[in-house]
Image 1 (tube, rainbow, N blue to C red):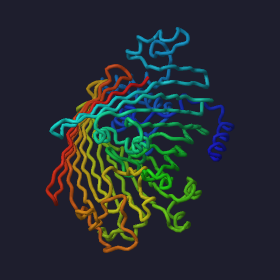
Image 2: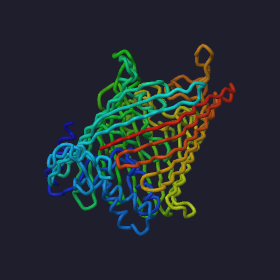
Image 3: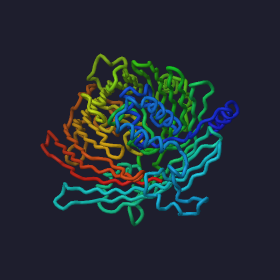
Image 4: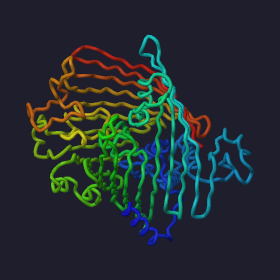
Length: 560
């Protein structure tokens, strides 16, 4: 905290003359990120920071302006989507484009009828030349209908909350978000509908008469530009983030984990883009308070951007626990692995390399290669248990064969045995027991195909198919482990090995087909419906037993 305040005060003193609009971040689930991605693949945008994709509102606004400058290259639907987001990110309270539920000038609730219009909506907004505040109401309703059983099960989730955001002194963005919800119906289905329930303490504790959950976010973010086109930001707090590349799930930080508290530093200038993050989270859930513990996640990533060619980067992660913050991992300019050796090799470190192309309009290729622990000396022996490697290859084709507003995505991910594990279970690659990395976990691979089509600015169709193979550990009928093949993130190879071999997809083979088809419709601005049909079918090739999950999902989101 002291370090953050010192940096913040220094920036304010040195750069008080520079001004920005809205420094607070755009939540990662906002649909504008999908639009920016498509425009980047199309070649309209030369760069967006995808390895750490959460952007300030003013950054999104600037990118939208860049797209607007090339509007002649946009389809009719893309022009309408652009206009839709330009209104949203203008942050204006002009009565012609925005409305407030609580409007002191006209009296409370006088604009109630305008809540069901395409105007940008706020509960309340206040603006001054250098300071502003926006109050927004948030609400969600989920309905899941399971058709897998003879008698269909269902689950309903409903929550309500608020967001207070704004910018002070033209440099300091802030956000406070609180969401509280409840669940009725089948609890197992509810966890499928909203996997984040498994990382909610109130849900797991289950000590009240109704299943309930809560999520909270809040941060301060300072941004400055000491020189033209040099962007520096420091953020302290918590919000949902992801790290690394990945069209489906990501090898580095997928976002399927609980929200972490972090201190983050971003630097962008010329061809250099750098991110450093130090986060705290928690270990596996336990009903015994003495068994609960804090763990830390550190991350550095350096990327070089070459216009009209590619972006290439190198990154590191380190997970540790059992002590306070390690100052060696807090420094952004360092090499984690050498630091770890200097403090007696207690922690779980990874290094990765990534590449993303941009030399062909409408086609993007990307790749990530992950090395778990120090295995460079073992790359010649791919079946050795210490060869804990993973890689991901993907391609994004926008406007294929000149079909406007259509995208096709293919991605393959392979993760060898024991990746993400650690000899100390408290240091494995998890938070609250949830895998921080790719959803398939160790000793598995996945082929993903996805297609999206924007019918217009309010309606988007999505189709996705995934084929996943995994090799699970073998257990006896009484639950005793018979063979560890590196398929469980919570079970390491340990210090004493029965064999130094680790064969990919060894163990009980389970093959799973995932199918999903759906659409998102926003008939009125800020009233969003996500409707999908989902089918998951798994087959254990050893026991020849198949299981199936067949369900429909309706999600309604309201934000104003």
